[in-house]
Length: 371
Image 1 (cartoon, rainbow, N blue to C red):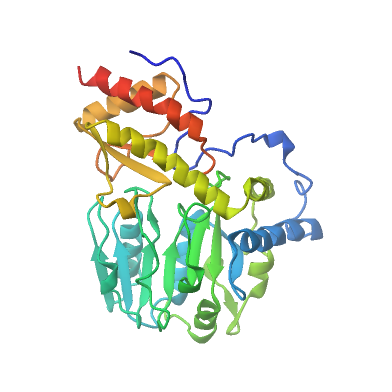
Image 2 (cartoon, rainbow, N blue to C red):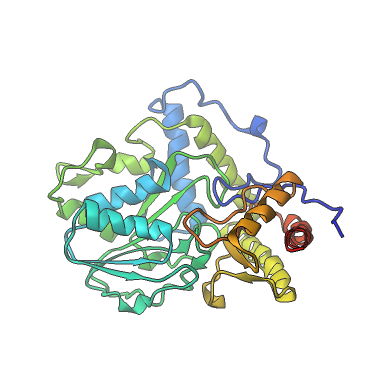
């Protein structure tokens, strides 16, 4: 039978993600709007972004946090173009975004000493193949495959190379072994449901040392440059951005950080996301016609939860359209390059009760389409 209870919030998109519970744009502190981002008030707000991100995430001493252009993509590109080339590179990929970083390194930077370790959607490559003497590039969570790195045990504490981690759908939702990560990138519109266009770049002291000791042989655009005269432009990591940011987006992100603190910090946000995944795990366990795209439970993402249905691709599209038309789930179709299926966001900005309400609707839509 057709369910009667609908999710209070049907926004389950994997990016931009749902705003936090209780979000009200009219409650944002917009005192910076119409002011220069280089005025004291603008610098203070951007400085708070850097300082409070480090505080909430519990970053180790000496790690720097900066706001950079062009979302997570811009942050990753800055790291790849500014730091790679000093050592051989190992790239681990298992979905479309990781493949994009491989394309950058091989076809754009044209680095010959590159090793690619890949896996099909639903699987994770053997990360133990990586060499600690090489620079290692990888995503922590495959947003389009629903496959995550289970831990950082495969990363050597005595590594000579840098680890460059695209963590845009993992930060604030998964435990991150910061001491093993030299470059970490994310964007506001993912796990915290912030606004787009801005990236976050976290550097370890080892990453800073690379920037100050190595100059790549190719030209760098202005928005990629993090050093001047062989020294880190430290202002970038105090809120003195390379180009003009949206101060409205900054206010929105600070609101999201305040919400995480009120929730109980990053550990509470991680626990909430795991509880969301548990709702879907129970549903999948009870229904043979639906399964996780991730083939190993240990690598199952708790943010971008990817599901396969016992239907063909056109039928899956019908399920997605039915749920959208009923106003119970928006934007939950699989990523365009991924196998046909559903992709449901399970980060902390999504309420467990909404996922519980959604599950019967998925079953109803499946039954409707498969008649």
